[in-house]
Image (cartoon, rainbow, N blue to C red):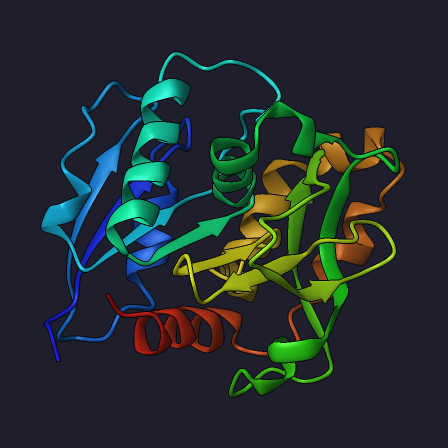
Length: 230
């Protein structure tokens, strides 16, 4: 089996996502973080065993300067069989790159944020450590409304119908929610965003009193790195 050598494409404006992703990697996993919003160049993804696309406070509906190059990376990985994982913005980016602008958009229900229940369905029920309903961190205004025809939806809820999908043919594992946050890091984020929550009708105190139902980082990052191989 080839050694793990992961490329983390960090789209966050504060360079915060890569370290959260890395905190869940096994000891034998090499990784390179590239801070795309800060102006880093995209490396050749073929030099890596896996590529991961992080979340961001940016909207996928806006044309960031790097988006064209990011979409090229997604398509290059698919054509070369390099496994990719997308989280929130990264999840939406993968679908935009493969299917176009028509498959992403703003959530009609507004902001989904806090520790929120998600229903695992289909192959999602086969992920070790994932129950039929899990409570995970959400923080997004945008959504995906269509996935590649070779993909299968594995997670959903009433706010955002496509909360996750797998595509074994294209080597894709993609999640709308944020498994990289544990309770401490997640509530630190929500404390910082308390005004945003309040302005969108979400009680910050209730969010801070809540927490995840599983160790989502271990469950989903381990699944991706162990299951998806070139």
